[in-house]
Image (cartoon, rainbow, N blue to C red; front, side, top):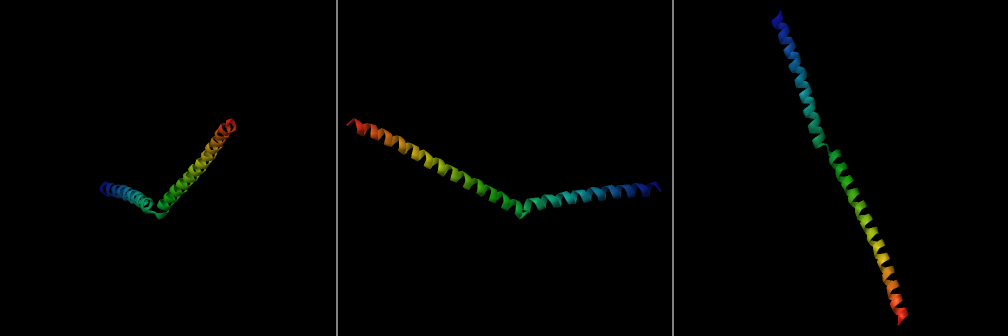
Length: 82
């Protein structure tokens, strides 16, 4: 009687453990190879790069205008002295 109970319990434990292990492996493989994750990552990176380029472009143009304004003021000061 106890032999059968022991084998029944061991079978249940190994069955449950094996089932959980297979489930975990399946989830890992699914997350690793899911195209949505890769696409979302690439799309997010592309958006960040685009945003950074636009920001750098606008900062550069703003700095260019400020420098041009300063140069024009200096030129006018020198021109007025002559």
